[in-house]
Amino acid sequence: MDDELFPRPRAEIAPGAVHVPGWLDLPAQQRLLAACRTWARPPAGLRTVRMPSGGQMSVRTVCLGWHWYPYGYARTVVDGDGAPVKPFPEWLGRLAAEAVADAYGTDPGCGTDPGPSAYDIALVNFYDRGATMGMHRDSDEKSPAPVVSLSLGDACVFRFGNTGSRNRPWTDVELRSGDLFVFGGPSRLVFHGVPRTRPGTGPAGLGLTGRLNVTLRVSGL
Image (cartoon, rainbow, N blue to C red; front, side, top):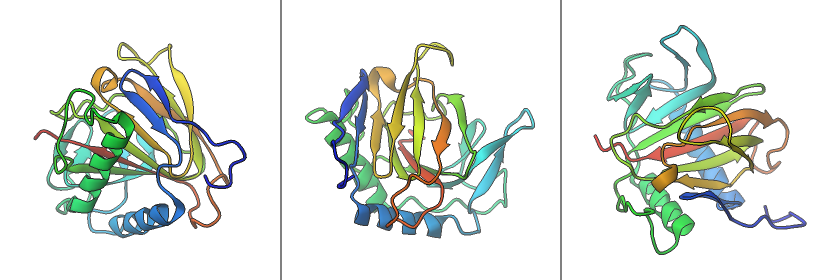
C-alpha cells in the first residue's frame, strides 16, 4: 500500500509462483469490489458450498463463466438455485492477462501463454470473520494456464505448499488488499490454502468488512 513505511518487494515463492504486493491501487480495488457486490446478488449469487462428505465450506462463493462445484464445472448453479451462471466479463479476462504478463515479465504464461481472451472462469470467495480454506489443488480445469489470484479487504495468511501432498513443506505468505499472486508452470498444481485471515486489517477507504479473493482461471473446456 502507498502508506507503507517499507515497501514490500515482489517475490518468487516457488518456480512459477509470483507474489506482487500492491498490484491494484485503491481505486482499482474499489471498482473490483463494486463488481463483486453486483455478482453476489441472486440469481446465481453468493452461496455456501457443501462438500460431498456433507461438510460446508466456511467461505461463500459466486462464480462467473463456469460454475464450480465439487469437483467439476457446469453452466448452471447445479448445487444451488439452478440459475445460469453469470457471464465472465471481457475486462476481467484482460485484467488476468495483464496480471500474468506483469508477474512473469517476458514469458506471460510461464511456458504456457493462455492468450489475452482465454480466461473464462472467476471464483469469488468471501471470507467473513473466522472463515478459512483448507489445503487443496485447483485441478478441475483442463488447461495448464496460470491461476491469477487478487485479494481485497482483510489480510490473510496464504499457505503455498507442494504438489505431492497437503503436508509440509509449505511457505506462508501474507496477502493484503490489492495484492496479486500468480501460480503456473511447475507450481500450477501446488496444494494451497488460507489457514486464517486478519480481521480489521483492510484499508479503511475500501469499505469492506472481511476478505474477498477473486481467482481467475482458464477452463480449457
